[in-house]
Amino acid sequence: MTFTDDITEGLRRRGAVDTIRAGIAEAPALGRGLAVTFLLALIGAAGRVTIPVVMQQAIDNGLADGGVRVGYITRLCVVAGVVVLFAAVSQRMAVFRLGSAAEEGLYGLRVRLFDHIHRLSLADHNEERRGALVARVTSDIETLTMFFAWGGLAWMLDLSLMFVVACAMLAYDWVLALVAFAVVAPLIVVLRLVQKRLVRAYDGVRTNNAGMLSLMTETVSGVETLQAYGAVEPALLRVQDATARRSKTSIRAGIIGAFLFPSGEVFSVFTVTAVVGIGVARGEGAGLSAGALVGFMFLTYRFLEPIAEFTEVIDQTQTAVAGLRRVLGILDTPIGPPPPTDPVKLPNGRLGIALNEVSFYYAPREDETSPTNVLSNLTLIIPPSQHVALVGESGSGKTTIARLIARLADPTSGRVVIGGVNLKHVANDDLRRRLTVVPQEPFLFAESIAYNLRFADPLASDEQLQRAVGELGLEEWIATLPDGLDTQVGQRGQALSAGERQMVALLRASLVNPDVLILDEATSSVDALTEVRLARALRKLSKGRTTISIAHRLSTAARADRVILLADGQVVEDGSHEELMVRRGQYSVMYESWLAATRT
Image (cartoon, rainbow, N blue to C red; front, side, top):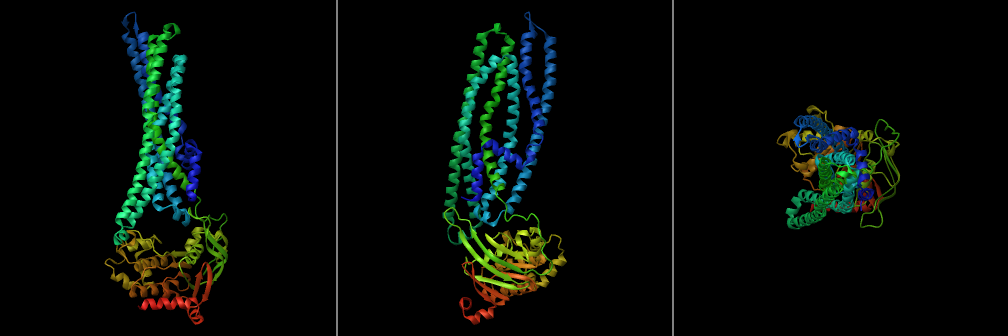
């Protein structure tokens, strides 16, 4: 179970009311001016009580001595028309206020959720699959939007109507009112029992829906690999199974929800029957006139209308609450490395790096009982302006060291120091201005190369982009492209090769002009010309900068000032390429094996 799942489980134990309160706390606009909105809804509800009151007055006072008092009834109708019109305007204002507050609140919640997802640590992104995170921003927020468009509106209008009608019923005859309330009371117990089951059912729907979306996203993204290995059919079966699970949980929730509909109708019949029977039995001697009894019957129907509608509203409310729980689960997940309370500015000039007795381990996954150790009491000093190549087998700790230096994660113990300052005391904005990471698979937007370069510096002019190309010696490569810097890179840069995507990433990094450069080389093989261009661009970009290369191609290690060979989170060999080759240790064996492989 992931950390996010633990938080979501805690929210589930809170209950629906506490979850709604937490949601309003996260999106204050949802609760802003709610008292005024409800007051307007009460005025609107009063308009619906007007007609039963007018009917009672017309029967008792408008029909006198076998005749009809036309003038009296006309005045009643005029007054009723004015009251109903005023009530309708008030209700319209209440609907507008609630809709505006809901849109404003959900807009803020969606933006905050999207921002929070991008601030989560990389470990949380690995645990919570990206498709599920997308589902939080899209389908779960959309569920809340649909709820406020109808369900939230129904709660406000129906509750206000029930309150006003209940007051009118008590004013007419408190005995019959209590009879009506007593007959309806068991329905509340029924609704509560069904509600608990609906909560669990719709939580299952949301969970399976997120899993289905995640699997669909994964399958569509990997269509090229699936087709290449003829594995489309098994992938489709997995999607089919996930869709079937989602369908089954949705059907189960629908069956439970369907139980609510006849419940409301049954209790409506019982209530009206009890009111009419007891009212007639008591007669006028109890102080209830014929007109009052007719008016009371209409009020009873008015009172029951919202209850019948609640059977539908509760259904949608449980869906919304389940979605809100999952949204709050993400928002309650702590963001990545916490920002410093009292930040220290990095010193000017080139920056050296030091890892002092650093240990790091990943929290155990669901199927593991102990954490995964990656680094253990590692001490490493990198002087300013030195180009260091990290080499070693997969899992040796190369990428983890780079992530710690970039503060994409904090060490479990020990300190990472840049320019003499503990990274935990450096503001993120300050660090990003001075340090740039070029990942193994650079992410490119489906736009032009120029657009992807300006992602680093939105104000960069065309001249600045051309200057960056010249400084890295990539003019020949740009000239081979159909539209130069305006060439479209395709979805995720698929129109470019892996090496070309890295060249775009190096150009983008040069616009930042960092003091520390971290480069995770692409593992894909590149042609000889592209490798020469990459090597030349990297040499020019790293000149005078503290550079750390995670070297998958050992030709990069051979060109670095210093090579560090890692194994099991420890430094095994450390020195220049020439020095390590003379020592005839593990590095020389690895390099010679790599060299022989490239010649075959």
